[in-house]
Length: 38
Length: 180
Image 1 (tube, rainbow over the protein chains, first blue to last red):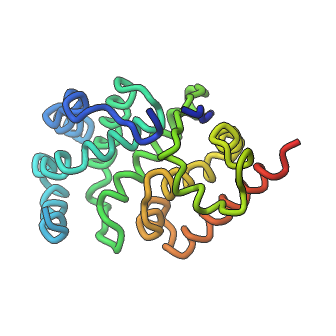
Image 2: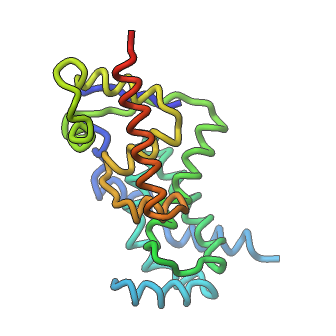
Image 3: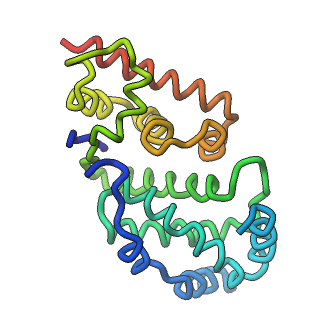
């Protein structure tokens, strides 16, 4: 359930630097191939 | 990447997953931000974002280019992933709202002034709306998506997206004026 708290607001997101820590294209392709391989 | 180039990359990635890279790079931050705004936790967002791209890569061979941008298709998958997460965990989340978030929404409620428009009341009434109404108000008034993009995300026409938005707004207005 989502509640809203009045005030950083809704549109505040982590910095690009922090966001890029979660990027991992190699892992994505590996997982995809592992799941699609017969 | 131009829309035409993007279509070319999509077609290549349908048969070669490694060609999906440019799409991943281009859209990762948008998808990450979209999810973060709703779950307010970076690690959880990272996990859900990787699920979104994995599902997108699986479903890519069935993707057909339509009027809506590719990002709308990804956001639709992200929205479903967030909903699935909340349905599975039944967790509560507190989403912060500040004055700049609600400025567009206030313009749609011109007949409400003073106390009736206070941020606290607005936040309280938004919390009472159902998930569909909250989603469409967030997309339109907080994230400023066009009706065409909202239509692409929700798989409806732009006109239908507009109708749904103003119905949700009507329900919000009713909650704000009917309070005891």
